[in-house]
Image (cartoon, rainbow, N blue to C red; front, side, top):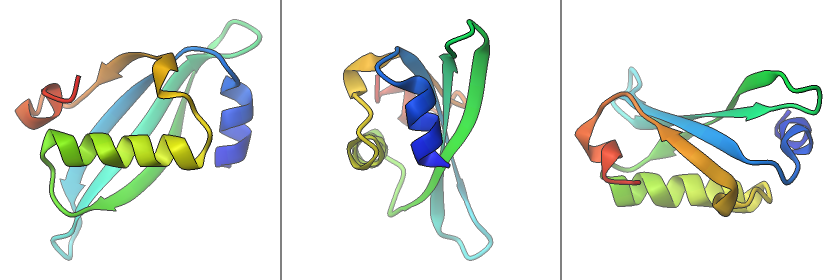
Length: 94
């Protein structure tokens, strides 16, 4: 699925939406959603990844996002907007 989403995005600009929460076993999880305009001009929003993170300070979340993008060959410099759940630790990631 990720490969297909990456192909949809290609070299286009995109936005990310990041949220974090604890699962039932008290482990921190980070969810990543990508928003982009497809080749037909329609706005698409795709759930992209959920990852375990050790903690939720902005640096750890940034490293997790960059790691996901690196493994999927998505260029971080193509990010044009970052969205969060208004958590203060996430706002520092910008």
